[in-house]
Image (cartoon, rainbow, N blue to C red; front, side, top):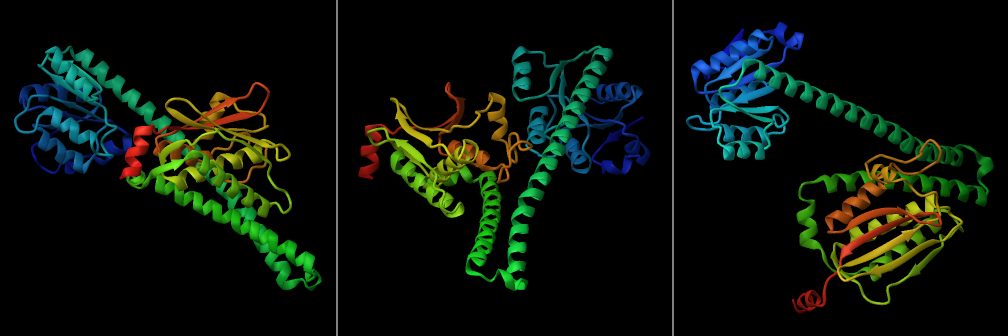
Amino acid sequence: MYEKLQGVTPSSSVKPEELRSGVQEVLVVDDNDAFRGGVAELLAAAGFRVVTANGAEHALKHLAQQTPDLIICDVMMPGMDGYQLHEAVQSSELWCRIPFLFLTTQGNLNDVRRGKALGCDDYLIKPIDPEDLLAVVRGKLVAATKRQEAKQHEIGQFRKRVINTLSHEFRTPLVAIHTGAELLLHQPEVQEVAKVRKLIEAIYRGGNRLERLVSDFMTLQQINNCDSQQIVERLRSQSDLQVITNLAIENFVQTYSSCDGNEVPQVRFEDSGKELWIRVLEPQVVDTIERLLSNAYKFGGKQNAIEISLRYDQHHAQLRIRDSGPGMTEDGAKEACDPFVQIDRDKLEQQGCGLGLTIAKHYAQLNGGSLTFENHADGGLIVTLSFPLLDPKQLVETSSN
């Protein structure tokens, strides 16, 4: 009913009919032959496929060939001990989700605490009642299965969201580009200057939309790079948040004025009355503010002015952006920062792929800041971008270097 692993290639003992039937596999690791065999027989009799290993090294050989559904491991073993095996399992992307149970005679409270502090799923003390062991094993496997099902459902929903978003975001500008180009090439009646210009503008807007889409994908990939934080730490410098905000407003107004013809976004900016020095990677903060202004413009009503103010306290500099839109629930604000999420997309026509707030939040956090949302009492949404404020001593040290 169970397979003994003595350094032999374990995959050779796997029965195809067991894999097809979905029998759950438990790997038992213990250097005590009698105890290891007893646990294996108990589990096998309960319907599990069991593989045993007489040490951590042999267990790793099996893991390299096949991933079990659960691991039961002794702590005190010659050579590599149970704690070291657990560390190796946790460090692997393939194995880190396997439920891991310590089963040992080490009943000392400190040993139990150490095992649980390492993140093991349970710490069981020998001797243990067979029914108790089976109950724990079954419970951990049920919980692991539910987590896996929930994860798969989440992945499926995310995939569906991405496909739906991209199918719309790629198709819409491509239709404008293709239709405009076709009319220019094949319809002589549209050769009047005004009509030609209108078609060219449509093609230009479609190209810009595609460019922003591709740029956002590349930005998200760069953010997810494990070196992102180190890069920001190395390149960020002392900057005045007021200067950064003015630059972002200028870029934002210019971008939307060129996109919407004669329509110019209205922005009311209240500065802080003093320099607000922060240490950031300036292009990322400028980009973040532009994204927040874009959201305020699109969803807050283009006919209303966007209100911007700079504030500060003893420790932080804050940029507050208020729109005149419907606001957002607390759960909606959290969800809106997830990738490819657009709140009320079925009610509102929204350009973009739902990455704007995702990137803005990441950029804020990479630069030591935060992004928060609250509804204004008189209507509209207030988005607050906050960064640690440099104190005068830091400014002197920075300038002297």
